[in-house]
Image (cartoon, rainbow, N blue to C red; front, side):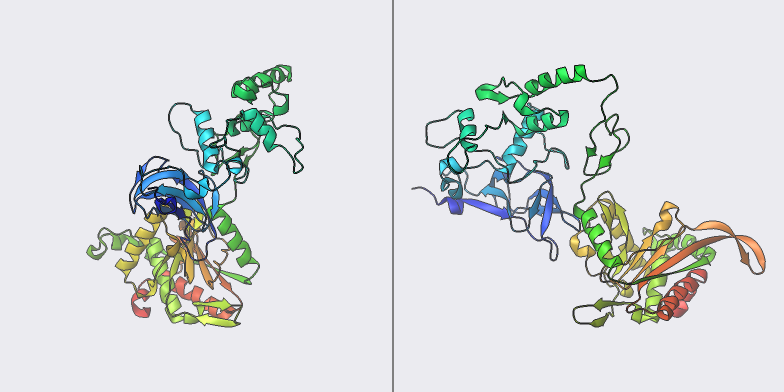
Length: 476
């Protein structure tokens, strides 16, 4: 009795790992066809518009097929991996594959990716690097050999594939594996001019190099200009090919989402930015004292902690600043909680996770939450949920030695505070010029719902607390 393959083979689809996301890029596969998996095992890492997320498989079984290679962007709801939940029980082909007429069966995108990896390194399995060697399009696939029919040569299959809708053959496309096509493209070689030496007229790497050798010998002595290098992240100077004049970085994932959000914010909310330069010497002394306080033992204590607390107190004193603009309903949404966003620079781009209900936290609790937020961001493990629902944000440009800036609001938020570098500067203190710790704060706010008076009050309160941190006690 043959088992129903529709029950045997389970399809795991790209989930919506964040609110309203429509696609995700496969960063890394942790399994390959033939590997045994268990329910809850992480099988891949994907990058959404918000963060990198590891995906667990909900089945026990053996991996039958990876439908997309690393570096591929896949729509939510699309099957990305097939698992055989009853291995060894019969025919290995899924029902849906068997139902397709042999002449119409197509190779999966992962088959092409696997061919590239094998061509590049014949011995052993090697995953495709993110951002490199990705197939040009997941819709361009090569015909498989027919199943259960007389085997035809690869050349004959190619001629049949090149026939037009009237059954008239067009000019045959040169036969070559995807990595060989990429090599020819990189070397500027037209495959139609290459003499194939492989089986059934297939062009090999050696054929491409042989065709390129005469062209290289005839080239002028100066090396030709190198092609722009494409990478997932900007390459270091030592990684860039000799002679390259530029590097092209694909705009996707977190960077793409950030760019879109910032453009939308900049041209939707009318920004106003105000600045104030203040003496934070007393705050810096308090930071040093807190480092030795037993209640703060084991916690990360730094100026950002007290700046965050100062902003929370200023919001408590001026609650109207903590709101958002609802364009669809033409309403101002007043919020009685503060999800405090902290801008963090990561290898994948700028992200803004937030501390939920930061207004209710004590100083030690706030320090603990800040430490956890920063550590998680650096490890690239920030979840989409951690970046949703922010109300007000702090961005610390001072860590880069920058004095100040004009920060752009995060969409849906009313204000963002930029903190500049804290430097020892000459300052008039008690009637005399003395060296003092000085910094500049910049507050950007949405002028549709925050007028100049309200924005100025919030910034002035933050400044006053940092100049006299004892106000944290009297004003809180």
